[in-house]
Amino acid sequence: MTGRLPDLYSYIVETDSGFCPNNNNDICTLACCKPRIRHKANIGDWIIGTTSSPIKSRLVYAMHVSRALTYELYWSYPEYECKKPNKNNLRGDNIYKKGANGALIQIPNQCHSETHFKTDTSVNRVLISKEFYYFGKEAPEIPEQYRTLIHTGQGHSQIKPTSKNSMAVSVFLIWLRDNFKQGVHGEPAQANTRKLSAASTRKKLKSEGLNNW
Image 1 (spheres, rainbow, N blue to C red):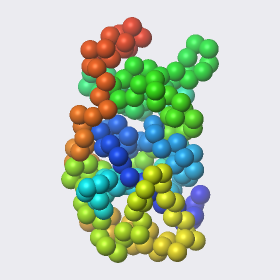
Image 2: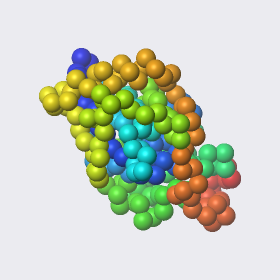
Image 3: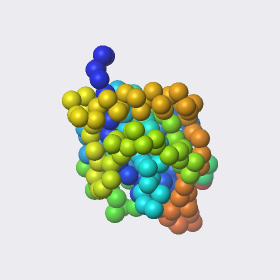
Image 4: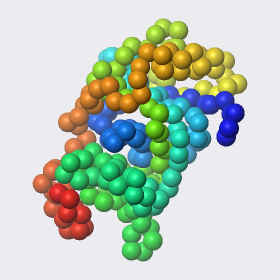
């Protein structure tokens, strides 16, 4: 992918809980939700998530895709152990692994229940970034000249190098890099949402032998 001009994927972050995207331990991951983006995005592409109504046109996060792994590899690689949910990381997104029969299973966690299993695992691919900008509740307003990049409905937009507004991608990335340091700039705007029962989660984790709780 060297020398390839990036695509940019844009979508609305309906719930900014810190789970999806997940930005802990200096790594930003998109492991759950957004299966179409996880399927299509290539190494070198950018993903941006923006605020929903009533506060539109603000940047929740931007990530530069540097790696893509299957759930099985994401679970097994030691460097992503920090992404597994435990008592110190309630919103860890490393929640899928291979079960005894070889099929994917979901481990107990506070953010996604079994009702999310089908959507999450419809694409067995985790997007990973070490160059990212996460703003959360400190989301800055996106300048007017870059707002053609903002997706305004369900699903997502894909801006390719051949798209009419492709030049906006380049200048947007210059604006982003010139005005902000990489990393986390704020807490999730809705940190208390998508939270399952802590007591029941601990009980399930212990029954699975995950005793970091």
